[in-house]
Image 1 (cartoon, helix red, strand yellow):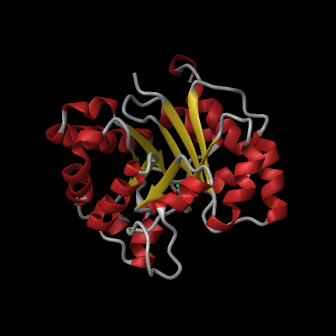
Image 2 (cartoon, helix red, strand yellow):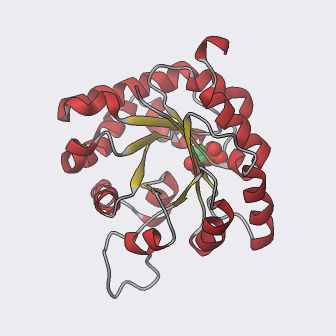
Length: 252
Ligand code: PEP
């Protein structure tokens, strides 16, 4: 059985002061049957590591370099992330694909480095609105996935895929539970072509998940939790989403 997971993506938000309040609020998180992770901006890794010590909440980053080490000004390597206790790293977020030109092969290479460093990559895939409206959702996601599956097909039970329709990120417009489930089932079927382990691969949904829609989304058979942007910036909302991930689907 796949363990549910809820990961917060703070993006480029926060300050030493506001982080202390947010991280302090997360201490109220009960020890749950769900993996909980917060992915913070690089400069705040040390603060988050220290504030989360003694909790069951994992620490993650929002990107890593495609290089292990060297003359790459401004880049942050996976071993540096490990030094700060990171257990997870987001790779291939649509904002990085759109604003930094990250291509599928680079995303796969970053995920591979993360796994080699002993971290869990949270690999984002998703279609734009124009792609969905032209009926290209599966073709686009299939291509994004294939790069990952070719390189890491034998490590599916260790990595995490996040389906994040670009049109739902930060827009308040969420995929319906059925729309999300259909794509998650497609992702699992595509992965099964590459490896028998597809059933153990976790697939999160991301895109305007809030406390009031999380339960219905997480109750879908192929949705194993969420990657949460805006709602991860308020401890009460994030904890309510974590609670939804651990609720008995029969009660939703
Ligand atoms: C994200 O950026 O990964 C995300 C899902 O954002 P939001 O929840 O704000 O849509």
